[in-house]
Amino acid sequence: MPEVTIVGAGPVGMLLAAELTRREVEVTVLERRPSAGGGTRAIGIHSPVLAALEPSGITERLLAEAVRVRRGEARTRGRVLGTVRFDALSARFPFVATLPQAATESVLAAVAPAALRGAHVRAVIPRLGGVVVRSTHLGRVLEHESRVVVVAGGAAGRDLVYRQGAVRAREYRDRYLMTDAVAGPRPDSEVAVVHLDPDGVLESFPLPGGRRRFVAWDDPGADDEPAARAARLRDALARRGEQAAAAAVAEATGFGVRRVVAPRLRNGRVFAIGDTAHEVSPIGGQGMNLGLLDAATLAPLIASWLHTGTPPDQALARWEARRVASARRAAAMASMNTVLGRPFPCADALRRSVVSAMLTGPSGRLFARAYAMDFDADA
Ligand SMILES: Cc1cc2nc3c(=O)[nH]c(=O)nc-3n(C[C@H](O)[C@H](O)[C@H](O)COP(=O)(O)OP(=O)(O)OC[C@H]3O[C@@H](n4cnc5c(N)ncnc54)[C@H](O)[C@@H]3O)c2cc1C
Image 1 (cartoon, helix red, strand yellow):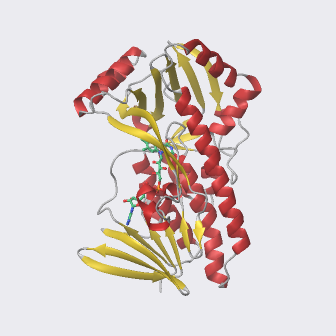
Image 2 (tube, protein in one colour):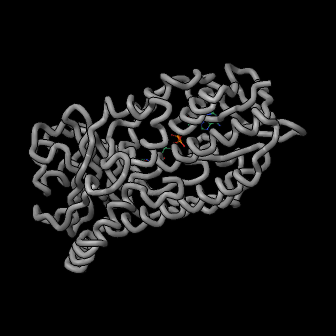
Image 3 (cartoon, protein in one colour):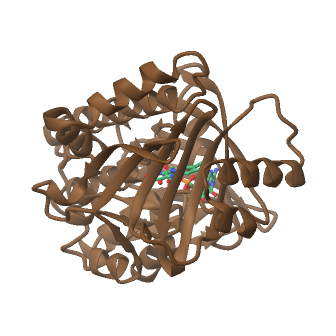
């Protein structure tokens, strides 16, 4: 019997597979998508994750491809409201490493065992001394029995582990437009910029290859046709003086935000990690980082269990408490960013003063630490 079955070959499942394999644990990964890739999502990797992945050599591979963002600026109407100095943090990696999620996933895929693709998991069934994972693959029903199962299936994996209604999801009314586009040479090519204007937030983050990630607040009732979305994003960029980027935008995806923090990540031999257990608004850029820390910190505990034959129950309970606390903290931070990024046509001056105060002096250093996940329980 394989020792661990992992459901989902997203970044979190793949990191766990790599970390368990490195500790000589036999792993099977089941993934419903027939091939890797797909739309771009997470771009920022924070210092605690880079530090956790250093012993495996993954950090070195990620940094070979990433831009090191050492500074962020909040701007309003072209004027700098405040600066966030990651380079002033006493962190092992005093910057945010940015690269597309697909690039992160291919770095992880290079060190993780290959997933069985096209295997759609339908049920996770605990048995005495093991767990059965039932999936469908090429029209056949497969059953994998293993000693431990970890569901890292993103939001779609939640129904496999939590009873209906056991985990509350809060939907926000906010919608955003997003694209990665070539921005051309510019003096702030390694600076993260957040424009806070009366018509809502526009984020502009550096990416490798002279590209930038642009995310703009969008009217929830606006036309969802692809051409209309791209036109609105071009307009939002042009209004903030991003003419070159506006000209380069060919398409824009739209997304909404949700907040989910499950109170439990373990039930006997079954674990839930990553977006399966917690989903935070991307306006804050911590969702994937939370999941990567779940995986990096769980791997040594599962390996010790399987090598000694005894579950380290106390250490696992402490792990669960730390990861739930970290997810709650990240969700609160993401909620605050989401609210601050809304249009405030009547209270824009108030928002400017709040943001300016938040980014000045000791509170500015606290904000930089919170943004860089220095308050994560496993940082
Ligand atoms: C627009 C956007 C921007 C974001 N930006 C950031 C950012 O800058 N920084 C950050 O940290 N986070 C960011 N995030 C969040 C980040 O993308 C997620 O937190 C991350 O992808 C979660 O990884 P995961 O492996 O847990 O889940 P996923 O990436 O969703 O992977 C889950 C995998 O499981 C598979 N699967 C699901 N169900 C089954 C099943 N039943 N059987 C088999 N396989 C299954 C899926 O096909 C998928 O491959 C962003 C999210 C969005 C939407």
